[in-house]
Amino acid sequence: MSGSSPMFEGADGFGGTESVRIGNSISSTTTLSTGAPQGCVLSPPLFTLLTHGCAAMHSSNHIIKFADDTTVVGLNSKNEEYAYREEVQRLTA
Image (cartoon, rainbow, N blue to C red):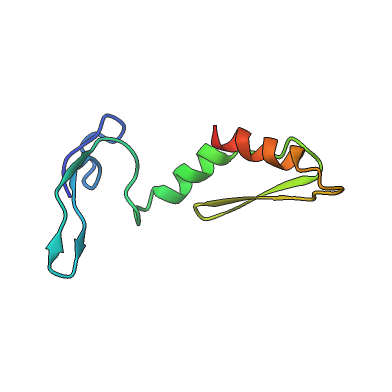
């Protein structure tokens, strides 16, 4: 992969075209202009910066982040899922 993007101009490995190979089959190519490729050394720090401010709004919820995964864990009592669902909605909006 080669090319550049406005954010990382001149950095090899960002932007350009991508395709997927499974066995002997290769997909059509698509052009990428944003993001960090999987396995890129900058991906973990960029994820950390992006999600640094993520904190639970409700005391019954906890947000757990590891590598590039985020999980919401909520305590739902008396079949009340409002706080949990609101937290998930806020994070995915």
